Amino acid sequence: GRRTTRTGGLVARSKSAREVVLHPTILAAAGAFLKRHAENFQLNLTQIMRLLPGQTAQALHRDRYLRSRALPREIEPMLNGMWALSDFTDENGATRVIPGSQHWDWDRKGTQEESIPAVMPLGSMLLYTGSVIHGGGANRSSAPRIGMNITYLLGWLRQEENQYLSCPPEVARGLDPELQAL
Image (cartoon, rainbow, N blue to C red; front, side, top):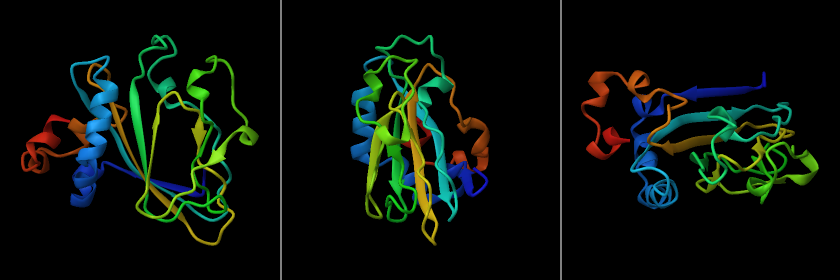
């Protein structure tokens, strides 16, 4: 929407974002989930999303459609993490999800009425697969809602945010080897 700002390429921009990308609990979850269908996984997207007051609700969608609708259903290509950098409330546009929608027929579209807000305090994280129908909520408050989306992807797929281009060599060579591998 026109009342949303997005900043990507966080590995190159922020040492704090690098620490979040390497959070041991999240990496363990991503590995356990994604390595069922790949020998490794990679960093797909790093983005700060700021929903300003007056932003309307984002259309509900599945992130896996960025890959292909032809990918077999049993292969889940990605694991998304939305970190709350401000409190997420229904009023300020908390991400809305439809629990269980990853099992629905691909042609079934969810409605806002079927979705629930992922209400969470600053510092919390929502973890969901690319097949879950979701979208940013409407910000009816007087303050921005800020979240950081860190997404991991099967190692044999193309990244949405090309990490090789978004992180300059002079920054990349000084990164933790585990982060370089992602």
